[in-house]
Image (spheres, protein in one colour):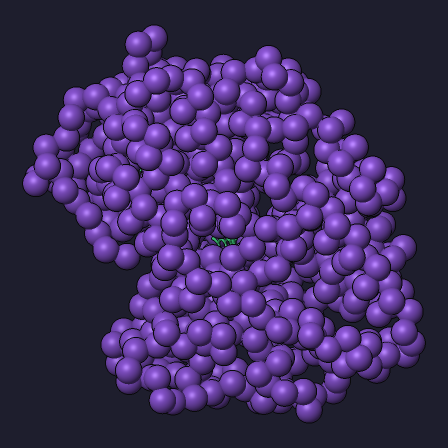
Length: 559
Ligand SMILES: Cc1cc2nc3c(=O)[nH]c(=O)nc-3n(C[C@H](O)[C@H](O)[C@H](O)COP(=O)(O)OP(=O)(O)OC[C@H]3O[C@@H](n4cnc5c(N)ncnc54)[C@H](O)[C@@H]3O)c2cc1C
């Protein structure tokens, strides 16, 4: 991602209509919409590049492979945002949604061949019952998606309105299953097979450290966001990698007139009556200040609380989206729970099954993710241990898009692999980050090797220094690298996609709230709005909260 530090070439103004903290993809989205609406916009980004957790990078010395370093698949980015901003983003649909190796066989879900999928279910489970249940269950989630997705780019609806939308169109049972009963109960009732239950459960656990039976329903919210994207719940491959998505958003923001400064760390936000004062340090370490009509926090709510507290504003002055601080952070801080491993392979490893490796690796390949295995791993991690058999999922980008490989790799069998390990909470890494990282990686690769016919280590490419092409990041690493508090990939646990009474969403979605309340981006300070993943309806690569923040600004004030 190109670094833009134009402060020397183009002296900054003393005041902007909008100052955006953080040039993650949501900050960039907010900047693009606000600038297109005629507002003067300054984006300040701490890193020397834009994109936040949606970036591409060449992590291996001397190897010309640009991997989506953190996030890798796109589902939640609305077509509406792509069209409104004219983003040249290309997404590739994956034919095989998942493959789950089990002993010497496995479960392959082929979205284009029902007969093959039915046969695969029958081989694994011994009957057609779970295949039929699978069809019914995902037809239900698809119908909920079709109804709910368009609401994500509109002001918040009250809970009752979303309930009506679901119950009138899909049925009471759909509402109960997705919004009221713990995911674990629903999956046990729906499917008989432990592996089938687990494959479905993973969507509730990616980025959410939870027991599937938790009364908090955090796992349900995570599941919901994994099945409603763009009205289909499909997870597509961004051509050129995730950096192409953020790059398109950066270009849209700049084309609309926004100024983006990288290596610019915001140190305090003081929301005054006539303008918010934003203090920041530039790439030379100099302290700077700028006045903002509005501040849009593309950073995490916990970071916003810190910035407001730094300005002497205190953190317990308001509530939004389920918390008590201006950014809505209450109780213990957010905690991520994933181990991310990026790899370059000389070729795909052999599997025990005779499944086509292209089919197995181009969708999501589930490793030791039966419901029992997931629950065991959760219990061990919650007790402070690295799980014995870490569950994970892997996916190969280059089977769908080889544009991320340079010419030296283009004609080879090389493949990039992304591994997303579940149930590796930040708490496991705090005391001994390096030692725990090594142990977590060893356990994760050993777990992966239980489903392969040859060790993954045998097919790892080596970089220019002779080191294996393998990059591993714990939640603690992500906290340092990307500024995700606790390494939480959604900035904090996801919230329901509707207004909730007592949450700071105005009158819980009624028309009487302020624009920021109605869009789900309010803080205790009228001039400071959430614009990142921690806002209501945030999380994932979507641009939804960034757009919502800009919409609220454009409704609030004239340029
Ligand atoms: C390993 C991993 C895998 C993931 N996989 C997927 C996936 O496949 N699909 C998907 O949809 N989502 C995925 N996600 C989640 C998704 O990437 C994030 O939820 C989303 O990118 C968050 O975007 P954002 O713009 O809101 O915030 P961020 O990307 O976190 O950006 C915030 C920006 O603010 C900057 N910042 C913070 N504090 C300051 C400050 N004081 N001053 C200046 N700048 C500051 C940061 O440097 C950062 O650039 C994944 C995340 C991770 C970490």
